[in-house]
Image 1: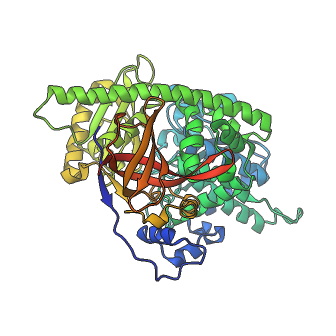
Image 2: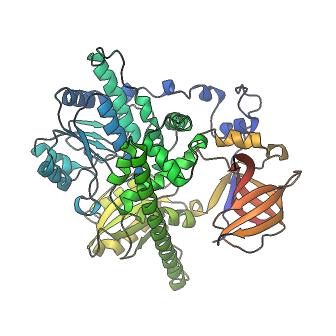
Image 3: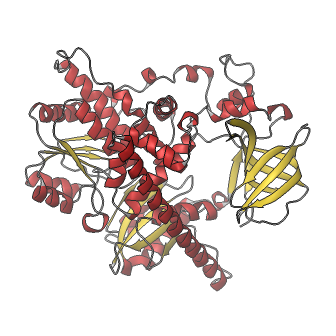
Length: 579
């Protein structure tokens, strides 16, 4: 696939701004281009988080939970089978125990038997097995009308915490905490599921404090000990890192670097070969998050949750090793499925030479795994720069399809699915999600019709120019910026992630040497124009493994490589083309 076009962000001259003395000039330029001013840096402490009392539904939820704790009731946390759901479940279980709950368990639905979230089937299973008094959902529940109704009929009370967009009607739970409810005044609508339940615990601690629950002990639980898990779930769920989420993630990373994270997170760092002392958001997103996610995609998410709940280092290491093995299986399965998906697109273009690729792409293979279709949709969305829906049988031989969708900027997935549903009632069995990611279920007999309707909605909502594949660049680096100090400042700033992109630059270089590493990676020595020394560079998954031109324009990140205890400057190249 050919290199993408490079678009440069609008430059902002921030040299005259009153930046703190420890902010590197290059970093000040990047911050300014992301819309940050010096005053924003001053509001980056935990004390600057949005106040819990601005999140709707918390008073009711706190009252229900406080009564359950005081009565010693059985509380069951119902999570989701992704990293946000797993970390949110671990935060809820750990936090409730810290706040005095004596009987807290958890449950994650079986994808094949019980579907997603708090389903009626899951409630029936809970009643038959250990019958909790109270169900607390994490990262799900806002669309669980049948599940909540079944729980009410069985005498189980339900508190919903979720961050997914609600439908026109809400489930009949005793309390609902969701920053995206209509009219909710919470300023950060981008909280992940783990962030929502963390806010609930903060509010519950204040509620219990007012009741005098901690007076005898003289101290109260330190919920900041949960921030490593909050950071992991927030980054792994790819929610936008707005100011509030950046505070949460930065605080979690500080705990990790200081060696104050839980045993499970430490074990995941060891299993992935990452150094927690040098931890950045990318480690959470690309190394730890996929390992936790793999359990829910291919096996049982309880394995990931148990790793995050483990307090014994040996047990945590064993669980982290199992997660790594499952993740390796997931990587192989994903690669094969992505290859199949790309072959489908190529075959479509070959059959329809005079027909453009659909604006909204829907793909299906009968042997795909439903736990991996989200990753396939994400990969193909990146490569095709179009919204993609990847479908798989709910289970082998099933006539119902489970699908995951991923979108491009400017195309709101959940709204698009709602429009398809309004146009063709009954075509989609159920759906939910966000602007950039969504999930749905439909009958396999309706696949062709759904594909046509989804493409029609995409053509209405997407301008043709928006389908051009491009990458953002923060412009050229000056020769004086290719230094260890600048790379260090960029690495540990941020935290970078969704909606607050890691700095990327494009410069012209002379290629002094190159060699192939593995089958698809290029190791290079690049000398920037005007630079005195060549710099090590690596391009992973090169589009072409032929000798590069003598002069290239490279899109890259300025980074540090650690080897044998020494740090050296390194360019992480995203693409190269002839200068």
